[in-house]
Image (cartoon, rainbow, N blue to C red):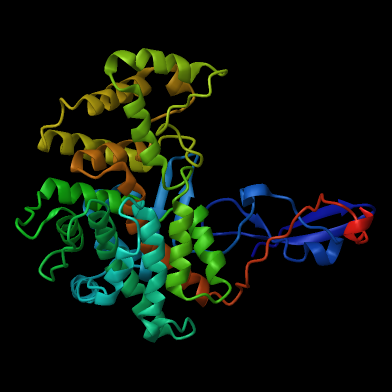
Length: 429
């Protein structure tokens, strides 16, 4: 805590509030006593100027284009680390040594199977159900099967619940995909790594196994690493808010999945790819560029710019390289849709209008292209985002449970409705 104080002068009275300082980033004014001192609340729609918690997990500097996991720059982790190592880092605060990594991998690997009765839930959905609808329902239903890890006050049960969520989410997500395309479920294999297992469960069939391409595995590993956590975004804040009531971890994660489903959050890469399909051909790009520059035209280029990053999205730099590696490895340079994407990328990186406004291609632009190249339909894009973000949600959930200053979430409001009215019987109205 800083010795500095913020002083508010209001109607001849003075209120003082402590100023708190983190290890990096802006200081914050502690307004917990605001109502007691002034009888007023703050008004902050979307909570964009409000620090809802104290956290040591992820840090973002939007002006610098910086993203840190536990202090480590995201580009270093994406280039040199692996998703499972990043999972360990987010959960426990430090990079693991060899023994710790082996034990962690073993623990996750041997929790990848789901209860056989859980597969009955999939059969209850319509055959054309969106995979995210399935994911929300099945993830929440885990609490009905694993009663031995629902006590959030027991550290060991919290640890087991976290392991289960991280381990079983690839299986649940792959099953959602298989159900959506009418193919039989593929069981996980203990001799495969986390990413390889997921890809095999998605693309193998009983009559023919799936040969995993190392370039594809590395691309998927990077996508998952880059999406593992992103500070107090909408879905993470939803998980924290749901958890603050004491809800079990499976229910809390299901709320995060539901929030992520929104097109303004987890659906951004799907929206970017839909935009590319709308453009359709390279010859139509000038028309859409002109529309994007026209303030009176509702059309917006999806996958460019970012609400938080006022500079280049640090995740996009890694995704750009990975995207081109995948297209080359799979010989997809001539795909019409991907040609549109590459031409749009070139224009955005060189056109004065986009450069001036810092409308650079973001991580959603590149991840959407990669996932399309790997063979995933757009309906699966947000599912893959949820799979990647599960470890971030678990880390944030665990941190919140262990924070003695956390209370049940209860935002206030600015009421603008009717004043006191007395009830009038229906025959007198």
